[in-house]
Length: 322
Image 1 (spheres, rainbow, N blue to C red):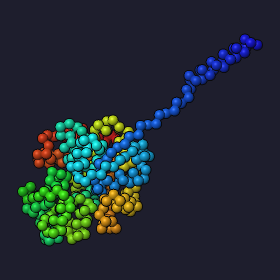
Image 2: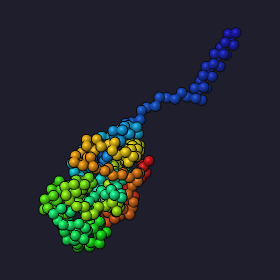
Image 3: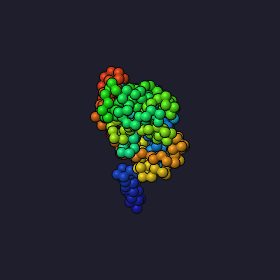
Image 4: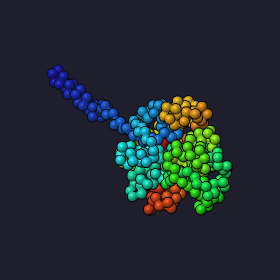
């Protein structure tokens, strides 16, 4: 009996050992590292899906923390990103090209806002005192823009599409949008370019829309860009961020009126427009085409902003789109 008992214990222990080897109990998984992405944001309508994603808990759902870093101007935004104090931003391809003119520092990962039918992004506005009502009336007329930016690029391309020659297109530097609006209202500036929704506000105050980019979405779009260092270090966070943006885009496109309070709280739309403003449709997952990139790059080179070509393949990354 003693022998049989020892044999029984031996077999029992061996069985447990073999069982443990064959089917190990799952070890508790360590929680995935939580990444916080800092996004430099201007008070522009382009950022609405980001705020909706935050409000609706979509970033958390996709495992990423997002911190918004408010900025007052595009130069301030670019400085923060260049200094590593922000990881991503809403900007334009020309801005990304300037980041990458010597080495690849940033990559476009998605469209942010793209003009569409009946929903322009940039507007060439004439003062009510100018008498200008169409593109032909802008021949030789100084148009207030922020020079060396997407606004100047869109202005020139839209007027060229209307048949104006380079010699007939005149722009003048009025970098600050409030100054541009004030000069238009007073008649000191005959024409200027404003983004949505400030174009609508100028019209409400008596100005006239001469042209907008709704028929030429290849020029006036904005993009979401991240630092290459962040993309390489935290690819899953970028995927999660874009998945959340995609869901938020579906929400706002489905029922924009639901988010009127966000427009007000984040100062994306001036108070006089809140009741009447129509939120534009936001683009679904996609990145700028190589043709779009090359056209903006050719313009920037012509202006002396870029010494050489900047690689589309190195600067636009669609691999994180849902």
